[in-house]
Length: 146
Image 1 (cartoon, rainbow, N blue to C red):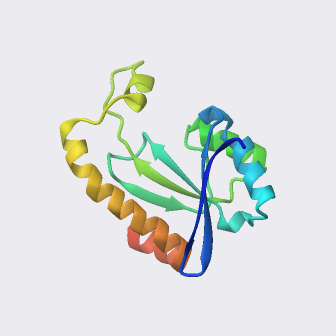
Image 2 (tube, rainbow, N blue to C red; image 1 turned 30 degrees about the horizontal axis):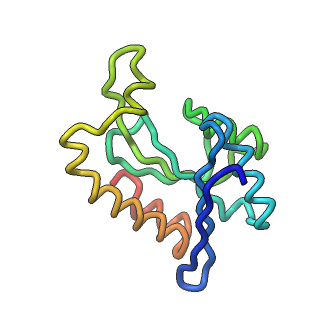
């Protein structure tokens, strides 16, 4: 309901991964539904998103803050009624002409980005795994800016 869900276990912990089927700027409804349905405490929520404000491949974990202009995060914050939840941002850069943001975000990676992507995805997976197993402080110290 409201998205594609996968559930698996990692070292005794159950992870529920949600890819909302709502429009991106209405992601909050799906997040709220699954938090309530699975009785997930807010401190265990990790929202993974792209970020135009970070250079391509940069990783950043934060436990609170503004939506940074991201409409999906804005909706999640409005629906949850808080800015205090963890978000993992993957930088996609902002190398697009004025008015070309949508085409850029929905477009294809360039050759350099395609070559870098496997390592960046591996590093992202390591960061998410660290969030689950080691917590936010350790993960932020280890992965932010890498």
